[in-house]
Image 1 (cartoon, helix red, strand yellow):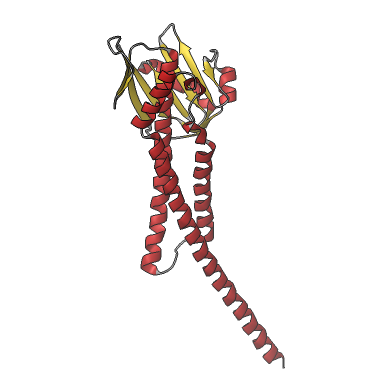
Image 2 (spheres, rainbow, N blue to C red):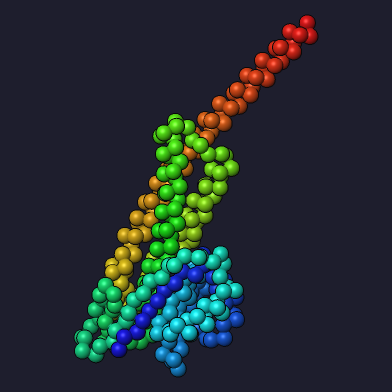
Length: 260
């Protein structure tokens, strides 16, 4: 038996407190930052993360669409990008142990804890894809200014534009730092060797750790560029102030000469 899992980046964040208060289903497990739901009557599973990701397991198109419409009021800063990650969990009693493959994980039996680990890693992967796209945009923007600096020997950017760019960079970095916990192992793997191994294998399959390190490296490049831009802008502002002072002194000398 195969079960389809789909993770979607809906927004930058969810109002989890409000959602859990108004979603009339008891949470199976979770915390202030996530909520995992089990619907045994439909054999469905749902995982919601406060960094704006929702993960469906065994949902058809109609049920998924209905829930996404319900979720809209709780989405903070919706993301209008096609950011999804699909995976499968296959139940096969003939397998003596869990096997993680590129497009699916094969397990001897499926239970809520196993589904939760698979859905967690699928959700982490799509969240990393979102941050990768944001950092790509930042790097592209910084390259644009660097090319202008190389060709013209000056930075063609206003102080207001630079401050807006700095704000965007800091916003992305703070968002990533706030969600660093996505790399943490869930509590349920600590005392369960099989779940712990499954979690590690899924992290390796989705390249979770290498992708996060690459993300951090690229953000550091953007920050280094910001430092350069700021220094160039400060030099430009200093030169402008010096000319203003020179002009004022010259004007004062001219006035003094005429007054005598």
